[in-house]
Structure formats: C-alpha cells, structure tokens
Length: 430
Image (cartoon, rainbow, N blue to C red; front, top):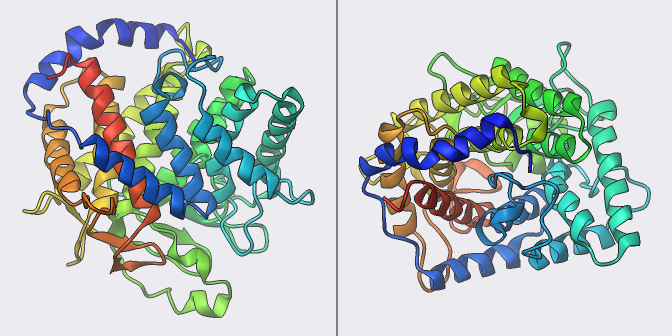
C-alpha cells in the first residue's frame, strides 16, 4: 500500500540502519509450524465475534499474505497475489449474515459501535480480490456505509473523539478502539485497534488524505483521554462505567453487560493500567503508522509530523509497559496492581515493538527489542503443543479475572509471530 518517499527511504535504509539494533538482540527461535497450525485452528473455531474475526483476518494477512498487509511497502493497490482465500471466506460468511437493515459491516446487538470496524480492512481486501465483481462492488459499498456510520452516526466527545459505544449509550472511550480501526463511544484501547487502522486503510483505498488525517486525529484524541503520566493508557473512560486501570490487553468484557444497572456494578473495578488495552493501542497505532508511511499520499513530506507523533506515542506505551516485566517474561494483567501474568496483552505489545523497529530503522530500539524477545519466548512457551491454546490469559468476558481459553489471544500469538518474522527479514536474520 501507500508508497511514500519516507517509506521508500525507510525500506532502502532498513538493512543498514536496523541491523545494528538487531545484532544486540538474541531472538532466533521460531514457533513450530505445527503449533502455529493448532493456534490457527483454535482461532478459526472460536472467531464468532466481530472483533475476534477482525483480528483473525488481520493476523492472517500479516502472517500468510504479507504483501497484502499494511506492513508491506506496496500494499495498495491490493496485489493480485497471493490470493487471500481464508480472508475472503471469513468476509463472505459475515457478509452473508449481514442484515440488510444495518449500515454497519455486522450488526452486534448490545455490542460496541467500533467492533464491526475491525472487519473493515479485510472487507476492503475482499472487495478487491473477490472473483465475482458484483459481490466485490457490494463489499465496497458496505465499507462506505460503515465509514459513514462511524463518522456521522456514532456520538463523539466535544472535541471529536468517536465513542466506542453506540448512539443509544453515553459516549465512552476504550483503548481497544484504536486497534479496531476507529471505534466509537467511550474511549478505549480496543477502539484504537479497531477503528483508526480501518479509517487509515480506507483513506488510502479512496485516495482521501482527509480520512487518513482523521485516523491520526482519533489516535491523538484517544491518547489525550486515556494516557497517564507514565505513558501507559487507561482502559475505559467516560460513560456509565470506567476501567481506569493500566491494562496490557484491553479485553471486551463489559460489552456483555447490556443494562446500565449491570454496568454500574462495574464502576468500581479498579484504577490501574490494563496490559491488553495498552497492547490494542500500541498495535493499532503501529498499523496506522505503517499505513501512512507506505502510502503514496504521504510523499513530498505530507504527514511527517503525524508519523513522528505516532512513533513517539507507541514508544511511550511500550516503555511504560515493559518496565513492568515479570520474572516469568510476561507482563501483569494490570500494571499498577498485584495481578496475574497475562500472555495475550504481552504478545500484542511485543508485536508492536518488532513492528516499530522495522518502521523506524533509524532509531536504536535494542532495549525494547530485548524485552520483546523475552516476552516472545515466554508467550511461545505458554502455547500448548497439543491444543494450540496459549496461557495464562485474561478471561475474555471479565478482564479482571484469569481465564483458560481466549480466542483473541490466539490471534495475538499469530500477530507476534508475523511481526517477529518481518523484523528478522528486515534485519538480516539477526
């Protein structure tokens, strides 16, 4: 996708500048291919929620269809090969069940406004790779409806931050939003991984610099609301309940509490940083950063300040998170309280470190990479070679409790593997 002058320069210098950083890190043991297949199987069997399916499509693009991922220097127009058959199948299934009455990519009763956006990049890719052109055109039209919904129907804060929650609820920001491609309602981590990446990708597909700028703006606003003095992000602010904890992963448990009375019971959860939520935010901004740097629209110096900001914001999240590394090589579920070690958020944060080192090869990230290597070793050690499930993980339905099986965690394992592979390739296999 987006091939900017900055991106071209970064690609050209990656070996020369990133290699010294990589030599300072011993990180050479891959996850066994048989184990990766088990992880994929568990994810495919359990990806019944929009945000899980969206993360699954992203993991597949990054791991198995690398030229189509935003981390590839020429990801758009979508290359004709390889054909992303697995991604097409996932989108086809969701499209077939999409009600004609909705203007979202999927209808989630009682769910977050930003969740369906997590399917957005996969939906756009499918619109360019589907063999049936009528179906392809329909896909792209549905993408337009989703963008319109996010930008015009979902409530915002007074300064423009899109809520992670639907119009029927108060504005609320979740860190998850940033990774999903532009989530709406309450500022949260998940929204960051869901909505901004989708908006940025759509901006490239539509040659719309304003849309790309909005993706950046949502990251900026979410950081404004969620960032703490340490650089770590809180999980959820505003709305009927908050989780101001410094969460590494950023689980989605509260989406299942449908009444305000039930949500009120959760308002006293804790004031701490959630590991997975920070992972959602860092990984989401890495995707936005890659999308901008690899876009033709970023040439001639455009978006230079945005690239600088996003890079700095990812670094501050990673530095804050990695300072809490435990003796077992993982990060705690909540940074500022005594809680269990959590593999899924740890994996997502480590993946962001590898991505950042490749996207910004002029800087020495050896310290972050050394921690990422420890985390990757611990995460891989926690993946069962008989079942494919990774542990220990947070309960996907209650982000304050330890769980057993977590579908989104399986996707994070794949994202970490893909990021590590690309870092190895870019740095000469150090």
